[in-house]
Image 1: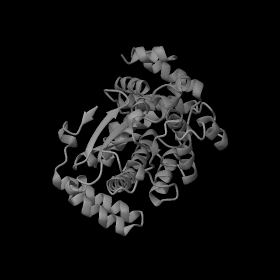
Image 2: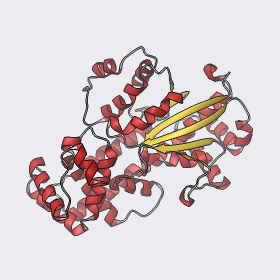
Image 3: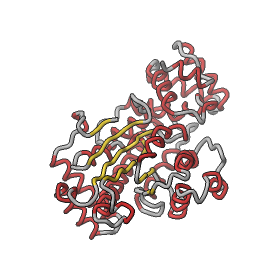
Image 4: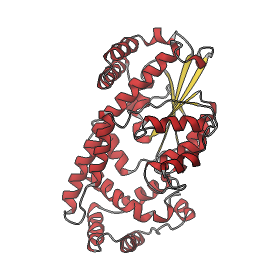
Length: 369
């Protein structure tokens, strides 16, 4: 766990940078159609010391993880036991589903009842259902208050996010060349990154509003408390939320599902793009192949935690040149990306580099030691 006393140069933020963050909050509030809130946020952000003197002391802890499987969230759910407020990542959740999440936390419904009502499989292997059930099961009957910081599905920022995700999958692997596809993938990464910058600005405006409401006594259950602890769980590409909040006067800490936390190539490319940093051709090509290879390599390990998978893919990719990755792509293309044929092609390429294709969790963990 890292408190705000520890700040690597890349994450340090001076007073001027904090005020830039305040301006971002202002923009997000305007996007939400609330000019009065935007003006209020700027005033409070400019004088955080005065605002902090009112009401309970508030501490924030961010838990960052992958969210491809329910197993990715387990560490954060343990931290929730001491939280007064839990704010899970909630993009794609409408008001009705958010209410059902609170019902589960209050013990009025079980996760299985919600899954059945929405037609989710009990053990999903893909889609939002994985993330949703990974949150629902640990919060059941905890009585924790939930806050949803993400925009609702019909908000412009949410719609832009969904559209960017959809466009990233609309790539015809059979019709285009490897160089053309990697360049197209770069464009999709940039589009998605742009939506996530705006999304983080929106979330920061919601965090500021929540803190203001607590200090102003607008949440009755916290009026008599001296300390209020807020746990915020988001995907690991969103560490910018912590950087922005810890750059001000708020008490903010962060933790990851595993340490050291390893980012996949695609996540690394997205994060760099969000920060306005260069995304190299090499990184884009490896991110593109990671997207194609990952579901094939880990077909038998779909529900297993993501971090060992990411570590293995990075280890394997590091042994292959871009030319070799292109050759791998072309061989799979010749087989029309048939899963079984592609798996054999990948297995052969890895074996040539001294890596065995992991078929069990034990083999995967052993391969990344």
